Image (tube, rainbow, N blue to C red):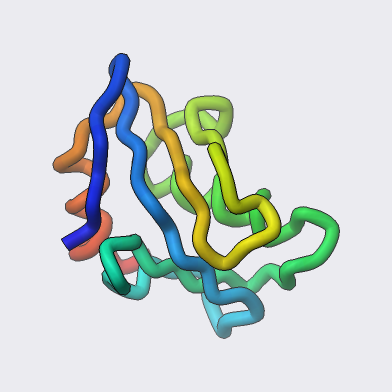
Length: 97
């Protein structure tokens, strides 16, 4: 199960990113984190931008509502998304991107 925290109208959770995948998608759960595959390479912030864009698109929210709190240069990142619920995050596990 993806571990989440709710705080001040936002949900905080961990994401484990795999770059240079064949397509952008949610790939399940790994060690309490949401596993995400991205086509973008992990250079020049492209993977982070692709992650923010994918999460905003799947949750039907603006890109500005999605923040990377920590782990910008790591595979494991802490993400905060304002204006969504814990259940919307958990529903990503059943969503096909």
